[in-house]
Amino acid sequence: MTIVVRIDASRPEAAKIKEAASILKHGGLVVFPTETVYGLGANLLDKDAVKRVYGIKRRPPGKPLTVHVADIKAVTKMAGRIPVKAARLIKRYWPGPLTLILKDKRGRKTGFRMPDNKIALKLIKAAGVPVVAPSANISGNKPPACAKEVLRDLDGMIEVVIDGGRTKIGVESTVVDMSGRRPVILREGAVAGPEICEVADG
Picture 1 (cartoon, rainbow, N blue to C red):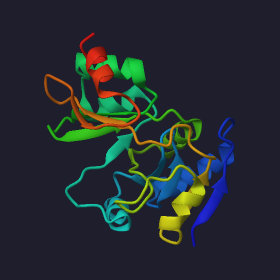
Picture 2 (cartoon, rainbow, N blue to C red):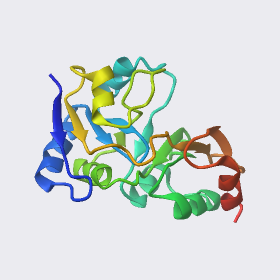
Picture 3 (cartoon, rainbow, N blue to C red):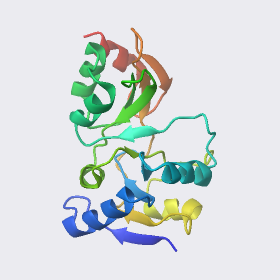
Picture 4 (cartoon, one colour):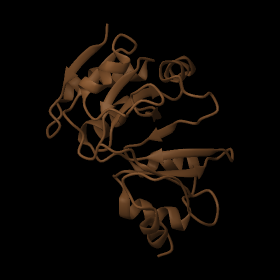
């Protein structure tokens, strides 16, 4: 049975965050709110947890998952030096609804996002592990903007849903590939593509 935990979005209760973070760290799946939509959180270092995410969402196996971070250090730890144009976008839009694709230290493309939500940031920091969090819905269905919508798709399939109220934006993040010389918009979302290119160029 999926447990629903209500957490104050403006003042997240530390004890509730700590308990959910422990479940996440040790392989459980925890859905949490961001400013865009609710995300299906899993520990990237736990292969079984990540496999469950793909299975539950019915997500194509070749489609990568975005790492959600609580600070820039988490990005540099995985990707090394951040390119100048990507750094400009980070300065302007993070925390916020922008996912950046960068090359990690092994040369693989990896998506990173810092959500603009107190619950999400505190949960990620408390977990102390890389957290992947695609939208908390079955692929092809509408991404959820509240806990009730999460449960329509995922009730009984995950350990915890953190109910932090309705999300501010309700639209998924814009995804930009910054692994090359120029920004490439992979998904239009909450931030307009032309604006992103202008900011990246300085």
